[in-house]
Length: 282
Ligand code: PDD
Image 1 (cartoon, rainbow, N blue to C red):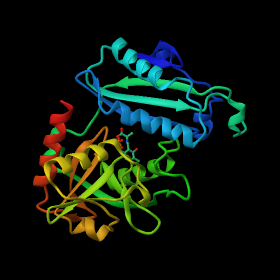
Image 2: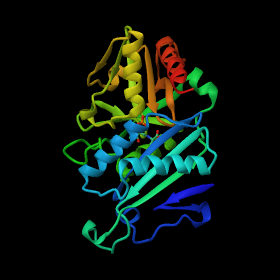
Image 3: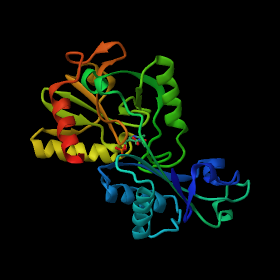
Image 4: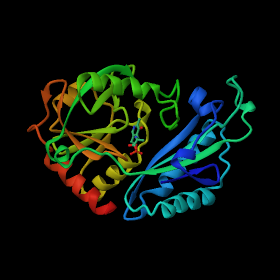
């Protein structure tokens, strides 16, 4: 396995960053999780747009141009003879001193790791996941804007810890007002009476690339879609619930907080969307 580390291709053992790196010391940096299907990068432009937008928002100078970044991704895939799997692209503020001032970090570091993916087993896509809501609240735009895919994932990790304690794979996070925001690393959708709903991102959700792909698919397939705030009550009484994410793709939820969702397995619209999503990527 070869890792792109700031302009060089190194082995996993040699892929090391400084203890003074502000990504490590402060979570100061950004990242993307990207899929490769059949040797093609899925929604590359959308991921790079989100990366460069996140960088601009936090005043982080990415040392590679957009074209150079595309080339670095392609070259890392080529060197690993990689056809299907996951890419983690990280841009950290880079090494500085112990103070938090980014002025002390002369240059950002770019890291590209490709890896096989440990996704949910096939039966989970048919049977659906069990999920729970957690007490951890999503940070909202007046704190750290959730549109910035920053390395600062403690909020999400606290959700993941609560999911682990409940023995479930993904949990549901609300915002401070009690509206459903998203999972620890997935967006959420519900379906009621044939209409597909997902929270608007201002509620406190990442503008997920998979979310975007599903919104497009709904349009193409003729499903009515509404970006509208909703509560846990709406989740409990939904006909179908599913999560979307680069790693998870489209995965049904069969139970939330002990309430059975719909018929208790992946519903027809979720299954249709997953099938059509797989057709796009494969
Ligand atoms: N997840 N919400 C959060 C908080 C996320 O971290 C992610 C991405 C998503 C889904 O976004 P997208 O469809 O662009 O992946 C939503 C990790 C990084 C992943 O699934 O790879």
